[in-house]
Length: 183
Image 1 (cartoon, rainbow, N blue to C red):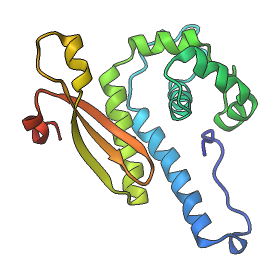
Image 2 (tube, rainbow, N blue to C red; image 1 turned 90 degrees about the horizontal axis):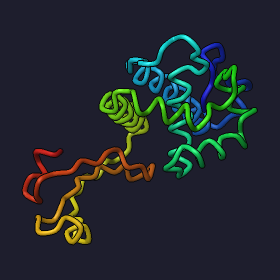
Image 3 (cartoon, one colour; image 1 turned 90 degrees about the vertical axis):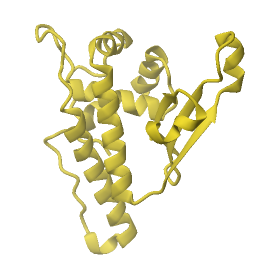
Image 4 (tube, rainbow, N blue to C red; image 1 turned 60 degrees about the horizontal axis):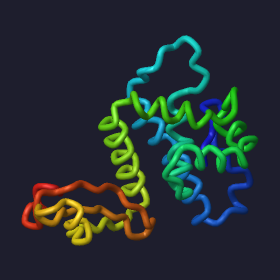
């Protein structure tokens, strides 16, 4: 799915491939190009001296780690190391998989709102491409009420892409009646 800028997704023997498979390959290539488009808008706040990893590569590796179910950089990097050869080849990583410290430092200093907006824009453009249904629903987190001591039940508004089983975004809303504003 992910390729370095120098490589293009080529389909040889097009007649041998089903139209469904050709459509899937086209979606993957466009998905990758839209990922580059949306995430390249984020400013790299790192000092250029000693910078070994491209910002976009760190973002791509983070998305891969998140999609694999990891919520911390240490375990994510351990998992990515299993595929280091293939990922380095496909992404053009000159120095392999960055350390968990590199991920941690970067995500402490980048504009988190810009990253969130880039991720949402990318997933939305991908979902639009594959023509999926997006469900929007608000939920009260009743079990969290005890932790907040005396305050109202917190509410979360979710947008979920049904066919891809992907949460597109979540936002905290003030109360159940405020869902339209959250949307």
